[in-house]
Every structure is written in C-alpha cells, then in structure tokens.
Amino acid sequence: MDTQDKNATKSAGGKARAAALTPEQRSEIAKNAAKERWGTDLPKADYVGELTIGDFEISCAVLPDGTRVLSQRGVGVALGRRPGGREYREAAGGNLPAYLAAKSINPFISNELLVAASTPIKYRHGKGGGIAFGVEVDLLPQILEVWLKARDAGALTTKPQMAVAERADILTRALAKVALVALVDEATGYQDVRARDALARILEAYIEKELQPWTKTFPENFYKEIFRLRGWNYKGLASGEKPRRPGALGGYTNDLVYERLAPGIYEELQKKNPKQGRGRKAHHHRWFTTEYGHPKLAAHIEAITALARVSSSWEEFKNMVERVYPKPGATIPMNL
Image (cartoon, rainbow, N blue to C red; front, top):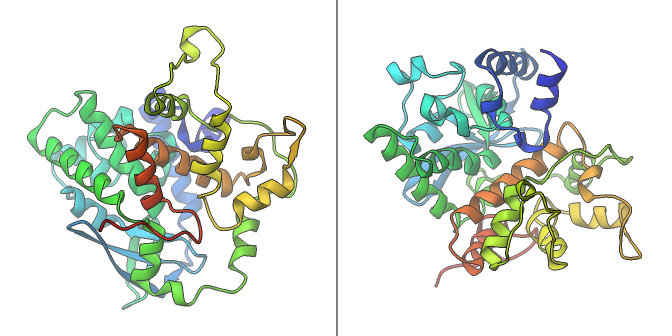
C-alpha cells in the first residue's frame, strides 16, 4: 500500500469518498487492514445479548477492551440483505458484507467505512466459544446513511434495493429514540461490571499527551446541515468566499460533538486546551490519538451529520441527538 492509501485509511472519518479510489486501491486497503486486524488470538466476548431497535433485534457483544459490536449477520438481516446471489458476487470490493455489497451504493461508502466493513471484528462468542464477526456499534448510523444517500441520489435501481433503503430509513428513525452504547451495555449486562478505572482508560485511548499536527476533521457537510437547520445562509468553499461562521457555531460543535463522545473527554480537552483571550491555542481535535481517538471522533461527526440530514427542523435534530447520543450521565428523554 502506498503512502496516499495509508493516509486515506487514517483520514479523519474517511471524508475523501471511496469514489476517489480505484477498485484496485480499495481492494488493497481492505486486504492490508484485514492482516492487521485478524490475528490468531481472538478476544472472547463474555458479555453478549440481543439489542432491540424498533421491531428489529440484532445480536451484540462487549469485548474485553470495551469495544461494543453488533453482529455482522444481524445487521444484514435487519436490512434484509443476505450473503450470496449475483449482486453480492459482482459487487466491487468482494470483502464487503452483504449489506454493503451493491455496485449502486459503492460511491456512497466512505473510505473509513470501507475499511471497517471489509475487515469485521473477529471474536469468540461467550456462549459456546464459536467465532463471530462484528461491526462497531458506532458505524451503524453510517451504514444506514449509505443507503439513504444512494436513494436520495436516485442510484438504487431495483425493488429489493429500495426495500433495503426503506428499512434503513425505519432504523434511522428508530435510532432517534435510543442510545446505542447504553442499550448494548444493558443488553449484555456489561453496565454492572465496568472497571473502576474506566475513565482513565477512556482518556488514555482518546487523548494524546502532546498536540498533534492539524488534519481536516470536520467535513463541509457538517456545517452545511447546521446552517440549513438554523435557517442561516451558507456559503461553502465552492463559492470562493471565506465562509462566515456565527459565534454560536463553536458552542454547537462542543455540544454536538466533544461533550457527547465519551465520559470525561470534553473536561480533559478543556484542561489541555483552555481558552486564551478570545480563542484557544489549537483546535480540540488536534489532541486526539491517531489510532483510536481521531477515528472515533470522525465516526461521531459523520453520525451527527447523518441525523442532521434526516431532520426537517433544528428542534427535531436536537431531540434525535439527545436520544441517540446523550451526554454522559444525562437522562435519556422518553416519549410519554
């Protein structure tokens, strides 16, 4: 894999779309990522359960390192996509699971999702010890958004594909009523056995000790959707004018992103990167670890953007965010 591909796979949230890569480059990314992820010593998931989202049930597990995963097969069943068939065999990127294996949706799969979906997390199931394949729970909104984007672009060409998009729409709206990580913990029983040093381990995984070089992290669509929902006039980079951002935008970014990532993250960023005069020494995202924190940050930003895309008003958007990504320690609002 050349340097350009390596940079692409480590980019913030795969903002460079997979369409920019050749099929050969995409295949090489997936193969190399598989070599790195699949080792001989597989983690055993002692905490497993069934996650209910609307009318759908998806098997889930918590791995020894705290990673929450959804069953790859369960995600496929929920979307009505089964492995096999001509479409699956002919789809570009044969390593992709059935729920992303369709040529018509290929241009809408980000590089980050391409790598993650092509190299599912391999682990041993706590009940029986059989080998299972999972996808990180944070990626589910991105998987659903691929189908919604393809539908909105008129790229879906068959009735079965439109049926998948309909399920993706239903799941996306159902997700607005739940907090995924909290539900996985509840379904598996993991919430009762969290280690006392969980906060310290979270901070170590997410936050670097030293400031990192700047990389583009927030895609233009993140701000474009906020402007749309707030009723503000948006002038993107394509206009040739420097975008003017209201002062409230920084507060929205903290509220929607940094305060909802994981317990203690925002507070630690405030300590490491305090305000100095009218601003800060650096962007918050430059403090995130390359291997773990930055990909998690990018995935969260993309998920928040996906919720914004399906919202018709700022109030609807904020309500969905509160339900899907509540701030640590917050009470999840319920429909009464």
